Length: 226
Image (tube, rainbow, N blue to C red):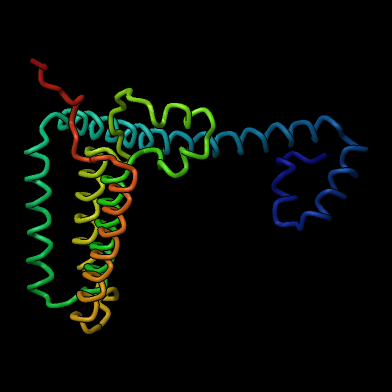
């Protein structure tokens, strides 16, 4: 009776009448309904497969780029001096950029505060001695003479990577004029210096109280007694 595909007649119709027509057609010719269903599923499958094929190369490219970046990042781990010299160069470029445009002081304040937070993590132990003293299992060995190496909360490599990334992101932010908020920069500088002194004083008091040195690199050696 109908030679053309059934879905051509149902496509412009709203969903509710379409379901009614499908039920009516099912009572007259179930084979055409089966052909309609297969045809619709085939079209949907082709569309979804085309989208999946388009996304696969992009996902592979991102995975390959991430693996390559991780490879070179791991290779730079032993070269501590070279890494920090590169970070010093990035910091110098950022400072020159801010000095040249004479702006983005809020970005610089946020960057300095973030670096200070990283520095505190670098100087702090992985487990806070005050919280460690609350644990019954660890309190028994707290006053023992057994040597325990200092383990940082933030390792040196992560400190370097975070600071370098922060300078690069901040440098990119200096090209967004919406972030150049006009402020009186001496107030921000004075407040950051006050924050730095207060935070470092608190950290030094914490170091003296719990008797740990964040700059120790190995097990102490004792001289022979006569």
